[in-house]
Image (cartoon, rainbow, N blue to C red):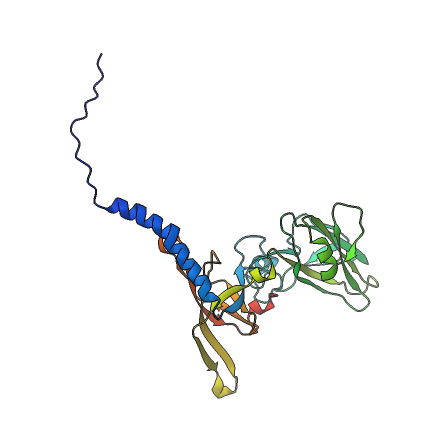
Length: 314
């Protein structure tokens, strides 16, 4: 039995030039034109750069206890910094870790979790305990380097104490007092670190110490690579409520940066190293022809010191 294979005549293929546009021109742009523009942008930044640190709002992680309690994040929270996510922001070129009551797998003895009116949860001693402790692990496997920031947020009444200690999880060494110097002795190689926090009070009738969180941030790149170079061609400044004697200075400026940052949103902000000012991104406009990022144009607003962002450590 024969198999029918005849399909009839076909219309000749028409070449309209789109193959060249979609092929060679795009290839040349990606291999030569766009990389050349990137190099020129980087050279232009070296002329008179503004040196910045960049902070990106966290989009995932642990939900802060202040959010769970209030139905929305608390603007004065020292754990999420008003964002609702533990840690709040991520500084470019660093790795951070927060120990707080939302951290899973925390070993504790003699402690309970206290819920405040608006702020985040905290650890306190149980009514029948004069001393207690908690232990938590920090995983620095693949995330290690010099310490960029260490802050321990707690309160102790007169006669009471809160003691923070650290040691390698594997090994026979004892605990060291948790200071930046001691921590840097341990963060020079990837490993697991054990943090121990001890709470003490002089008697059961005394108030308990309160431990809110411990904040650790380490550098993942050399210092020079933590800095983002920007350009601000124009700054607009206004004085608010001058007629009432409240001389608040409000400034806006457009920051132009190259392709170093792969993502910027209106939730992020910059720290001007020389001026020691903080600038919130208002709008993020990317120059990215055919999805190839070349630069960012970022209108920013200067933040006042009552902004929740000012609570976040630079």
